[in-house]
Image (cartoon, rainbow, N blue to C red; front, side):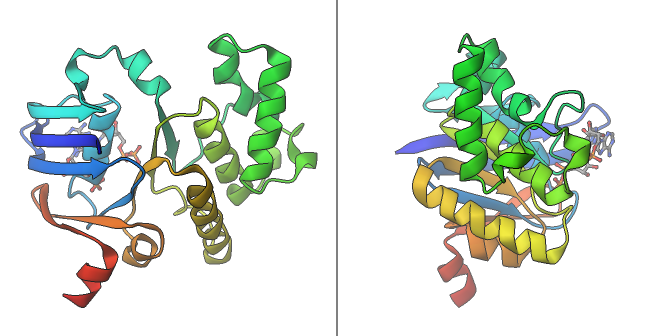
Length: 229
Ligand code: ADP
Ligand code: ADP
């Protein structure tokens, strides 16, 4: 079934830049989709229209069948985890609390949320001994693992990741990619990620959307078929 759909979606910024041009795309539940293409082709803008960080100027974005225009953004984002390049952790909270905060805000008891956070941290491959540290005391790759754990803490159906591994060195990146593949095998979330690295897209994704200049979608297919073409 379709989890996310773009129906003739356009985004033109107030300065006249058309970042996304009549995008039609249906993303299956449980798929791992990469948005690839050169800088400025509309990948990030497209992704941010899924969780309403950006509003389209034309067309309809649906999540689980609902036009997001009519869904309260706070409610929408409860079902959509979001991971950014810089991890975006809260500097004055310990690692475990960075992961536990959202569930606590949603009414889970602190003890229960911390227990769940410890399990999630283990799942993303972070050593339990690091859980009481602060973000600045972790490496970039470790922080990125925490970012993924935090995005998963509310058990969202959808996980959005914007260049999640681009700020770390190649060895750590490969490690994170392998971890992500393993995690997706277990969780079967609907994942959409932005990358400018086609090799990363081929390695991780089961569907690749290739954007080009002017914010147009050029191709959308499996990596196997794209490579064979
Ligand atoms: P990508 O993620 O592929 O690098 P973006 O979606 O960030 O592309 O940007 C697409 C285009 O929209 C670019 O030309 C960019 O400069 C422009 N753009 C992005 N955000 C804004 C904004 N807030 N105002 C005006 N133009 C923007
Ligand atoms: P990020 O990596 O978070 O997407 P960017 O450097 O792409 O950060 O953009 C930072 C901010 O500037 C964002 O709010 C984005 O919407 C805005 N922005 C990006 N490109 C443009 C542009 N060409 N004109 C105006 N604002 C832009």
